[in-house]
Amino acid sequence: MELLSVDDRMERYQVRGRNGTIVIESNWSLFRARSLKHRPPNWRQIEGKPLVDHALQVVGSTIQQYMEKK
Image 1: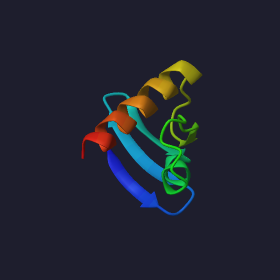
Image 2: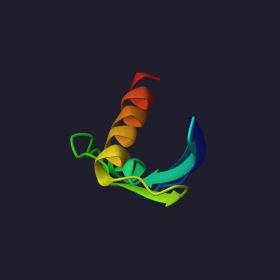
Image 3: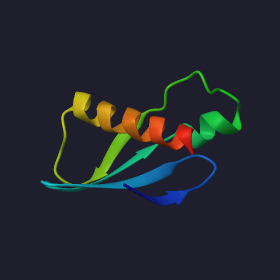
C-alpha cells in the first residue's frame, strides 16, 4: 500500500497485489478534519481491475485500521 495524495477532502492510495494494482480514494480526511471520526468513509475505486463492492470495502477498512495505528 502506498499513499499517493492527501488534501483536505480526499486521500488516494495505491494497493498492489498478486493480481495487479488498484487506486482507491476515500473522503476520510474530510471527516477527520470535521471531527467525525465515528463516521465510516466512502471508498471509491479510481483505477485498476474492477472489484466488487464488498472487496473494495474490505480493502478500505484494512487501510483505515492500518492508518489509525500509525
